[in-house]
Image 1 (cartoon, rainbow over the protein chains, first blue to last red):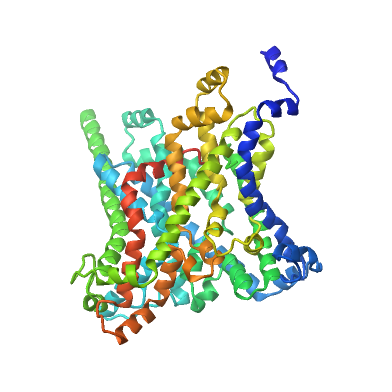
Image 2 (image 1 turned 180 degrees about the horizontal axis):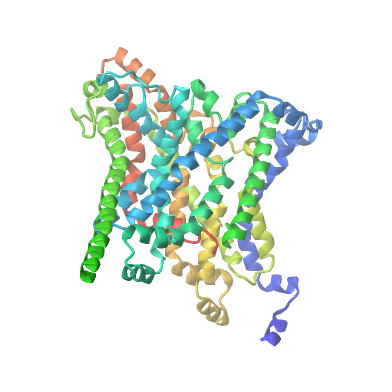
Length: 314
Length: 300
């Protein structure tokens, strides 16, 4: 075997000449990766420059030709109230989502697993996954029909003598709308991963427990939950790791100026600063700050997951 | 006495089982209603007559059935051009993404492939570090592809996560067949096309669907990278329609008094018709989408 290995050892060029087709296959992917993922990394220099888009032949060329300003934009950013507001909103909204929504797919999967009538199980599963495949714009349209000022919910409220609630305009309830619509879209589909883990639990464990006289509750508590605990922890770690980057398209579609105070998150602010106000450097600085902190969060959460569970996303 | 204890124990067990089971059936029933009723409500509103819609009398079934609103949405609001753009983007985009993804996943699935670690690092890094909205926008502007379907395709030409799903699947395939083909003198491309791909139809379908849904549903990139009205995608069109529906309805009402075209009815009809393709395809492709969540998503 060792002999065989030594024979296989070739220089890189020998290997390359024999397997050049494999390298050619990588070209399209690397091409797109370079253009859309790595060229923008060069673009982050905008955050350190007095960027004028018209100083060069094109927007990227203009980066090189604009003068350096060091951390000027970051200083301005960190001294603005707006920065802390959007940072807080991001953490609060995504934190609320984890708090309220994280347990739901777990409970759903455990209960779904108790259903013995196959057709009933299949039909309900199929139905609860559906909203996941709708776009945020469609979800917005549906929620607008339900909760808009003349939507069915407000119609029922006014008919029963209550007062209209501005679900999309009242800062007191808007975050609740974000949490609820996120739940409506994602919770069903998120049960799949837990259901798959539950299905993989050794059935003899349950049989042994039954013989020992354990009732259903204690079976769930002592077998099912410990069985899916690693998956639960992994999912939680991932959720926390992504706390700065998720929820952008949803907020972008759902929010409006009357709820900016409670709903404007980092990414939506990056968008309005950059595309709305054309303040490219400040917007890039905020985006870069967000990316760096998000990277640290994701790398460390992955490390935690690898250490504690022996599982990681890469 | 002893006997009695056993009996009561048995009854207790049955009771807990029955309770959990009852809770499960009721819970799943309510959950399904929660998913289904909003969809039914919107679909009903889109085909109900204007007076019922305005009076808030439409619940989960159409009242005063009419197709005027749907007809107006399809023919009078820029729906068809938007649909055409989205179909083009989804079709061309999915094809490009699949070719790119498969071609990338295959070499990376070979453990002896030299340079594998470096390439994998590039893909992982680009997955967890985002250059930012403005830098990406500047790249698109420099390339001169803003306001074209390519601007909606490029961001998703290869989604790292999808590539890893395919790569992991390839890795799990038995290597004997591949090796014997190699002995027979088949080249890598040939092995990929005539041996690996036929064995990988489940994962190819799953990932293909994930890409297609992603292209179909994308709003932000289409909104950010396209300007002209003729380049509007379905999602951009829908968003604009929802936000301008009251003005549209008001203009119509002051015109020829088509009473069925209410603001709420227009939104409902547009939403219904936009999700129709997904709802029609869903039952047939559901099993692949469910697999997508579990196949190779997490490294063991």
